[in-house]
Amino acid sequence: MSARPHVDDAQRRARLQRRHLLTADVPQSMSVTEAVSAIVGLHATCPPTMYLSLWARVPGFRREQLDTALYDERSLIKQLAMRRTMFVLDRSCLADAVGAVGPRVAASERTNMLRDLRRSSDFDDPEAWIDTARAAVVGALADGWVASSTELRSRLPELDGVVQIAPDRPWGGTAPMGPRVLNMMSAAGDIVRGPNAAGWHLSRPQWSSMLRWLGEPLPQRSVADGHRAMVARWLRTFGPGTETDIVWWLGSTKASVRTALADLAAVEVDLDSTGADGGGVGYVLPDDVDDVEPVAPQGFLLPELDPATMGWKERGWYLGDHAGHVFDRNGNGGQTIWWDGRIVGGWFQRPDGSIGLHPLEKLPRTAMTQLAARADDLAAWLGDTRPKPGYPAPFMKVVG
Image 1: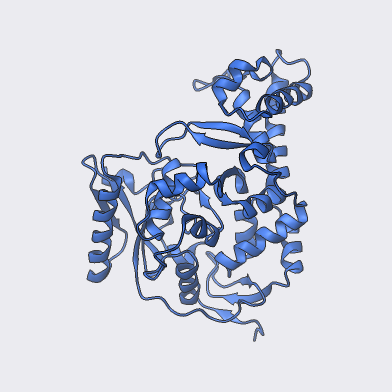
Image 2 (image 1 turned 45 degrees about the vertical axis):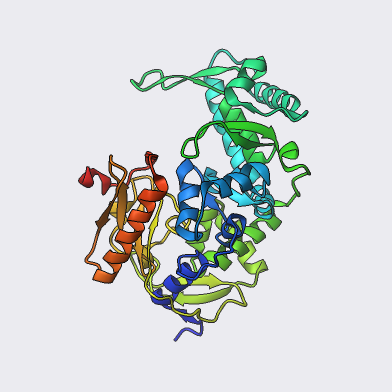
């Protein structure tokens, strides 16, 4: 018999609901920055996601609240971070994330650029070209100038290089290197996406010096300290989960995660299910072994790439057999219906703006009534806007 505490799937779902603010008792006074901090961060690869994730959680959420936090107060920052994914993070988490995975992501971006630059005959010294381009951007933004990628490339000839991508393929062609330099610099914490020159559901970022945007230097974290802080954040919000979950979510290595777990004195627990084989070992923080209170069944409509959908690698305990309907081949989760802490279907917006529901299993009448009401609320909140999914779920091929 195992001496480890046991956490069953029902208790994991109760934790998910409470810690991801998927309950009916989220305080009316909760700010968007508090909400983002509570769930570690919002996915922002698809611009509407961060707004819709907050709409689902924060009572009375208005788009202007997030815009204020992002662009006026700057208490929330967009950052290329875990798994080379765009997140919205609070300032403290930003420093931890850049410390933990920034060097790894920036190095990966640089390696990929060097590969393409070395294939081109137009760049005699690819290493020097990247360094020169980076220095030019740092200099241009040092005085507080905020500019789009196009504007930077127009002003800075050092940034205006192109390479051939897959010339022997029908989909091949030329690709500018400037945006890739900016992504590398963003991951490293040198620059940051500032104002958005497009509508809330679109993305046209303008770049700023990180120092100028924050108004102070970004606190420096070592890779080890960053890992320890980010693993602690994950355990507090997503735990219990497996080593596989944490390595995947953080986009890091087993060695780094194991060191962080040891430093945190994380406690091993037995889980009901972690994948196809069932069972497994999960981790929680030392002060987080006790059960949380059960949650009354609630229905939610979450956007694609929502943190609750994308928080774990091994998802059977909240996804069941629905993976093939909700996730695409690359593991991107689409627009989901949740009931009682589980993904039970998907939703979609019709051309007339109404929201359709696509259950993947038979649901109680109470669930359908509540979900239909949420669908009407979402349609009203979206109004005339028709956000286009960036990663349409497979079920959307069935609904048209």
